[in-house]
Image 1 (cartoon, rainbow, N blue to C red):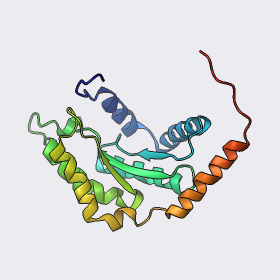
Image 2 (image 1 turned 90 degrees about the horizontal axis):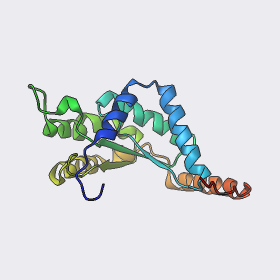
Image 3 (image 1 turned 90 degrees about the vertical axis):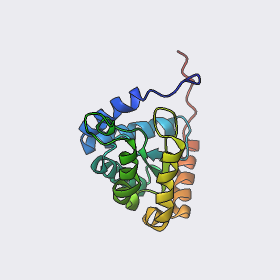
Length: 180
């Protein structure tokens, strides 16, 4: 990005694709990326929501990712509803603006995802969320911290899964480097 403000083109395209995809398609895509990371030697895997950007789509992503975490396929699930202000909150033509979107993220959206996530993240960048907006979401999460962490798997269990994956990877024969 070379010091340039983020234009958010890629997130917007992925948001549209995420909203249109079935749960099974999303699971398949996530599993493919998890497998790719594991093949590269990654032993601890965190994934984030942040490509639905509606209450329903963020909750759907959080539930799907939490199920994968519960099954031991990844370690952490992070809520990233404040990834980008979606086009329906552009403040144009009588539509709500960014402040209303932050209200939604820090309120109803956080409520919907809280049972399924352990962490909260915000994309604080010119073209996304400014520092004042960015502070509101984690503060809202901190105010309800017990709910955000209440259904997360215990640290010991997550650490154990990561160790088991690491041991399985150590038993695999080394793969030759890809030269391309």
